[in-house]
Image (cartoon, rainbow, N blue to C red; front, side):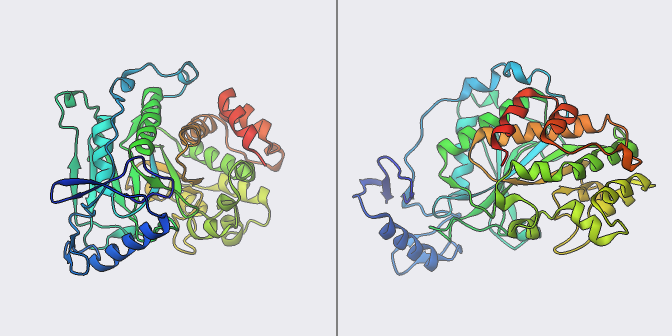
Length: 397
């Protein structure tokens, strides 16, 4: 198994026999793998040049040593004390990843199902669908052990399982450019116990699967904002305070995830700059105040997400799911992908608390009502959580 970080006791399986691999230079291992992947081309055909069979999206002769740590009891553990005040707001995550080498996405899903004791749906390769992915079909992977009845299930429409969704719009890891790229997509989650579930799933994902992240990949957090629960005035407040603190949020994210970075221009444009470029607003204050005059949800969605560049959804705060009625969520798109569990969990907490608390503030209707945008006011007035404040204070640049 090829892995730049190294795998203990890698094995190769040929005709049901197991052989220990000799130690080889990783550069040579990558060349061998590139040769295999270049010849088989993901078509489940025999590779005549090497005699190896490419089947169902991975190379059987290239096997990762099983990982035997038991995580089963952790799902029932009590959430940490500092999450007890975390609101019961529905949320979900999409984490963009690539396999370390080759095309082990199905194997990744199987390992996640086995060790996390959850059901996982993995899309398999076929025709190219929306967003560069495949829409041909799905395989449901689940723990088939005698304890699988403990598997936790969330029901929200058809999305009741963790999913591995093909995503060809992101770049594979540099050392293995032919490796599979995909999103880890959660079911609809809610409250502190499910936030602990995110922590557990990501920990297991990075332990039992060789995955990589790079600068083309992001972490997207969806927060439910049904129009029945969030009045137009509440939605205006959330959007206004997002514009107010956009630069502060930039300051504790990596440079490649900030306004006007190459990645930002492609995948998550500044909402504030788009408003300034596509409305009569002429200053940052005007951009905030112009939202207060919105007379409908759709007018607000259109002002926050003008149809520019690759499309309206490619903004830091994406409201297009609400506009199209696809699902009742706003999406925070600016965060980088990470294998660091704390990075992921704290960003989920930040996004949920931002929506929950900003919605309780009155809309800003005059320039005199615009507060100073500082890290202190963001966490004192909006986030209101010392743990999250301390985490991002250390990251601010």
